[in-house]
Amino acid sequence: MGIFSRGLSKTRQSFLGRLGTIISGTSDIDEDTWEDVEAILIQADLGVETTKRIMQDLRDRVADDSIKRTEQLQKALKQSLRKLISDPPAANISGRRLSVILIVGVNGSGKTTSIAKLAHRLNNLNNRRVILAAGDTFRAAAIEQLKTWGDRVGVPVVAGQPGSDPAALVYDATAAASARNRDILIVDTAGRLHTNYNLMEELRKIRAVTAKVVADAPHEVWLVIDGTTGQNALQQAKKFKEAVEVTGVIVTKLDGTAKGGMVFAVFQELGLPVQYLGLGEGMEDLVPFRADNFVDSLFED
Image (cartoon, rainbow, N blue to C red; front, side, top):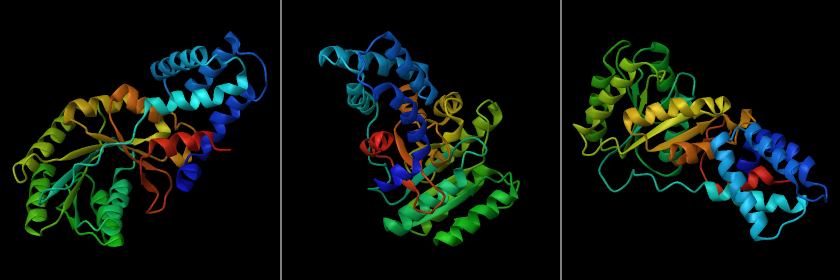
């Protein structure tokens, strides 16, 4: 659990620092206590709706277990938080000749570096034969960046010319991945605002062309969310979910923010599993999400 503890230290310090002032004493639980706990949860970026669910569950636990004192609240709160999240299902990237993962998100969310870390994990740690598609054809720098990462992690990259049709590039990459007997194709896409209709339509087109080469592709569509943006990311995520049938989420940059509470809102308000968390800049700091580790790290001394 060490990487979770280290990566979530800012969230833990902010969250528990404020919570500790409430639950460290031996006073009776009163309405002021409830208001303080609610305010801390909202400030930790869990969001209003998710906070309401937690507060109701916490009140029920306090009543059912006859909890009277503030120092007993931490255990109950930990149980209420754990109830909201779960480990993700196994990724649908096995059991066929080629599996396709489409990676989407807004500009600056950390898509390309997440792809590199994911490729490293699957190719070098899990012994899967991975290939990348440089589907962000709008920026020459994005193509070069993905090639550089590919070289670094030992994974080939299919790329085209800057300004070329991204859907055609992804089609070619899918065909190449199949011809080269690769296990997994990870497709990078250009960052785009969820409000740009034309670019969202283009994502739908990219999604559709993979199925022309591989049945039922893409098999996973993972949305990369910048953890530092907190609740602001959720409205963006809802639009991506509608446009390209997102199947899971990667939350990045959590090591640099106190807004780790937004992970609970991803589960509750989006109804999507969190597949990976970005908890540092190292190649192995993109880690599979584990609900127990996540909650425990928020409460670790």
